[in-house]
Image (cartoon, rainbow, N blue to C red; front, side, top):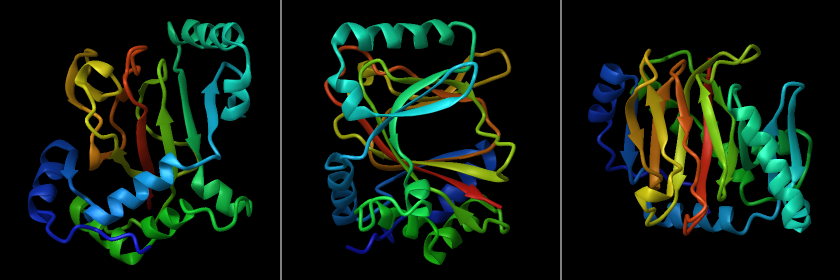
Length: 236
């Protein structure tokens, strides 16, 4: 299926918001058929990896194997992650790194690999150049992510020593999300106060300039759904 952008997007309004605040949220970014198709691809994905970090590095583990472990073992591992999060940058969520899988020749024909082609299409990149005003944007990478109960991402600004990132793009695919379930993308001021926050939503692009301090708040233990999204960074 062709991944299609909704042609009724108010590009001028998006440009103004991005210029004024460094961020914009665009509802109904894809056509309805495309959004439904992408959600189905995410929900049916079997190649999920639990991603986390510690003081030594960054790690991925087959999520199916993680779920197969005894509950007490999983909880002990999560408690260690939570302890590190007390005073350090820390994250715990589930992802499928689409760009890397394609580069390594893994899972050929995987339905989500079409998203990598989409975010590197001239149609998409030219729209992002227009909204951000960054004419030097030349490529993008792509991920799928799933935040389950207890998953989170602490304060960071998305800068990277090896990549010249312009902006971050989060395409939300969470339907009927209750605001009490957490999982909000939040932005901070210099005093650590919340400047703005976005609830997980369906078929919604959250686009923001890098660097900006932000986080994904923990999905609560009583959340009634998983937080699904596709993500991309725009690169010079």
